[in-house]
Every structure is written in C-alpha cells, then in structure tokens.
Image (cartoon, rainbow, N blue to C red):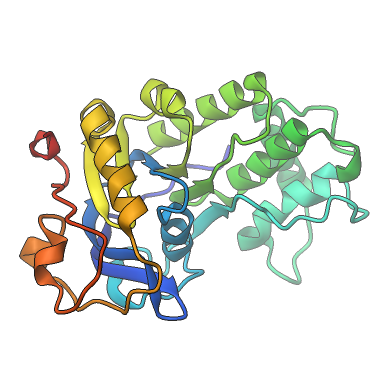
Length: 281
C-alpha cells in the first residue's frame, strides 16, 4: 500500500456556506485535529453535504475561511459519484485513476503501478475483478472499487458523503474496517452518515450540524437525545429565504447565534459548545 501521508489541522473560522447567497451553513468555527475519524451527522437538509463540498474545495464560502487544506491532496467521494457505469472501462482502469498524482497526463503505467492496483483491489475484496466492466458490478462491488481508487490516491484527508448508502452489510463492514486502517495511518477521515448506530459503533468523534454547529466532540457526548432534539428544532425553524446574516463575533460563535443578528432570522439559538462535554445540556 502507499505510504501514509501527514494530515493537516483543519480550521474552520466563522464559515458560512450556501447557494445564491442563501446560507445553508451558518458561522461554523471549529478545529479538526490530524488523524481524526469524524462522523458528520444531522437532520436531512442540515448542510452536511454542503460542508463536505466546501472541505473538498468544490464550494466557495460566502464568508469565513477553511484553512489547512490549501495545497493538500484530498480524496473525495461524493454521495452521487457521477460515474457512468455504462462507460466501456474495466475495474482496473477505473481504479488506476487514483494514481493520477503519480503518473500524470503523459505518464505510462508500469509494473509498480499495476502492483499497487492489484493490492488496492485485494484490500477491498475485489481480487479477480480486474477485467470486469463497471456495468457488470453490483452496487456494493462498485463502491468497493471506488474505495480502491481512494486507496491509490493516498491522500492525507479523505472526505466521504454517505458512502454506505444502498450497499450490503458485509460491504459496509469491510469498508468501515478500511476507514479505521486509514485513521491508524494518520489520515483524517470525515464521513457524512445518517445511521447513528453505525456512528456510535465506529466513530470516536462526531459533529452534529443543523445549519449551525450543535455539538462537536466525543460521539457519546454529542449523540444525546437533548442534542438531537435541539438539532431537529433548529433545522425545522430555519428560514431558507432569510437574508444573509452578519458575521457573529468569533468568541460567540456556537454560543447564542441569534443574539448577533441585526435582522429577523427565525432559526433560533444554537447553544452549543465545541470539543468538550460542556456541550452537554
């Protein structure tokens, strides 16, 4: 396998994200330590995919900053990967795209590259599938192949959006084990998930989002009934048509967001701390 890479500290400072100037994520400030295995959870439409897109560099902030990722190689697997499974390409060639950073546009694949592809396919349980066309794979097999491509990218930061949706339990278990191995290598792995039982079983850290930061820290301290109920209330009260709010003072972000608005913006106070049990009700 490729050698482990050094992950950066990821700093989010007063980060507001959205589309057409309508915010989907408000004033998010926190720090993600290198080597974190972090679940990103929240109600449907809470801004989870929006945040992961911003971390991947696919969405420019309305305001605030993301620091620590500039110049870093990031492995990103969106929920809808956009891969045309009918395209006439076999598994090995698709997986080998993960070596782009080594080979480049004009490079040739050599014996070492082929060996790395074989090892990556073995790591996800697809030995013998090298010559199979993508349109012959099941959903679980295709997801395994996409994870093999992520292995070859050897990025210090891995971003995944609902990677276990619509795949079988065995595939989920095998790929979750791979996430743990990535963390052991020192990679930062951030995963959008909806299965809270899966989060509790496999993710030491959780960030609960409901357009704003609700809680962030050890999973057992974040996934409480009180935090989840508050996240649901915040999300339900959020007004998609509200104007862009003024930036909250840095020291107050995540404490009482509504106190720093200079206009009517009916989404209520967040009342969440970051990183510690102080977020507990």
